[in-house]
Length: 171
Image (cartoon, rainbow, N blue to C red; front, top):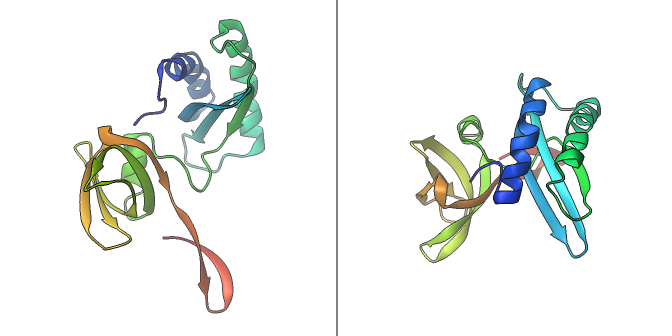
């Protein structure tokens, strides 16, 4: 589990991480998404100070990394550059993400099955020594998962009904 998943994404990260950090942001993930003939390079970032990312921030990052990606010519095929905040269902890619979101509901997929399953949803109870403890939503069992066994992990934003009105809650 990291901000990239393959050699191509690692090369991209090596090119863009410096300019992103110099603008006062932190790279959360760089991911190539291929759908047939279309490729998208998805770059997600946060502000270092923890405030919300806005459209002006996205423009700054786009203008900083787009020319570098063109010059380095890392991606051979045509692609669309998508720059955004991590959003409400943000990917958890760094140790600090797991530490910051203890108590929140997450969903994740493992490389190696644990108890005949690879997909889990539940409350993140603890993160230490590269290991997560999750209280599973379906049976309240607490399991431990090594971070290196995780393919993908995301916060899970759920909509709940509260006193007859529709409100959004982190759960």
